[in-house]
Amino acid sequence: MKFKLSEFLKNLVMTTATSLIVIVSMILIMRFLAKGLGPQEFGAYTLARRIISNIIPLAFLSVDVALVRYIAMAKDDLARRSYVASSLLLGGTALICLSIVTIVARKPFSYLMFHRHDYLNLYDASLFLLIGYSLFALTYAYWGGFRSFRSQTLASSVPWPFCR
Image (cartoon, rainbow, N blue to C red; front, side, top):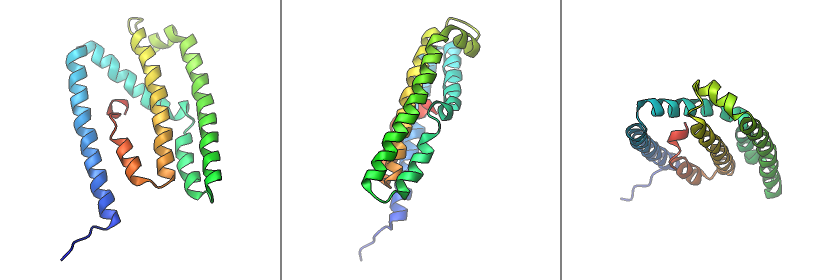
């Protein structure tokens, strides 16, 4: 007798496995960072990470949320591509404007975040993390809109737990 899993159960197993990979990698990365950075620097890093996770919707204008919906509703491939292009243009423009402002005012913003100017390097690195995570969110939304569940789930297992 041959046993066949339904598509729902396959997706459930894949999502659970991906979640376990993310949890384990998060624990390992955090442990590695805490040991290497020390308590004060690790605290500054986790603060920066939390701030970035709250800025993400503003930085990319939540385009990723709308993109999934509109790609899924699109009737043809040309419409899907136009949604991706316009999302990249709109979100990218917002991200570039925010990046320019944060680069120009890096010292006051760094002091606002950390109450010290010692963490300018961490502040600069956080900007790259913000840009990378925004591009990841766009890619994840793109796969979600095309209902490419396996690609979307595998993308979520990329070591991004330090962004969340």
